Length: 306
Image (cartoon, rainbow, N blue to C red; front, top):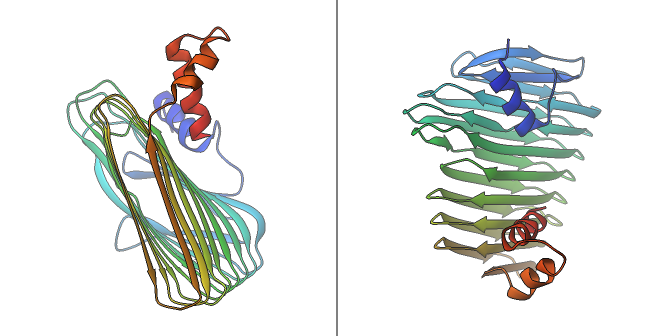
């Protein structure tokens, strides 16, 4: 039974205010709190390591899977392995994410390792949100690893969000795309205080007609550090685009490292990177409407990360 703190975190990371309908696996403080399968989506606990296997049948459409993780005790450190086996002709939404409430003196950490094996002509939307809170001295640490194998004609849209309370994170995402496969990634990230966030993407466009669009928008405040790396490898007739757009504030530090590798004469690859401060005329315009400088700044940041 989830307590009130855990329910609050669940609402923050998965917008869940009650047990969801459909397939789900809710993990709390290192244990499975509840789990449910459907006729088309089977969730099975792994026997060798912590984690689950999710099997989605061919032709499954208009269904969802929720697999949130909640940590509400100080000192918990875990590594969880989740594998998604998705058939042909599917159209499903997968909602993951982790929230940590740490009011103690020990670090709490969750490393979620997700692997996707996607068949042909499927459409997948994947939402992953990370959130931290608590007034203890212990850190809130999350290191997600995501491996995506996209079959012929399939498409994946990923929303990777971290906008509050995570002290340290290394976010590694790799993807391999077959013929006519498509990947779209939208990353939104905010750091403050002395937090550090590393994002590392490696995308391999292996099939003719494959494409990838990886875009990161971030805000770095106080003395926080962000490092964004994105490598797109085009080994076929393909198109790839990666972009890092960051707002830097106070004494923060932002590093953007885009990398392109073309192994085919018809690989069209583009990278963009922009790092800058909030424009003074934007602040002045909002302040003339009655906002304070702090309120104007908050409005600009929220709009940028939307």
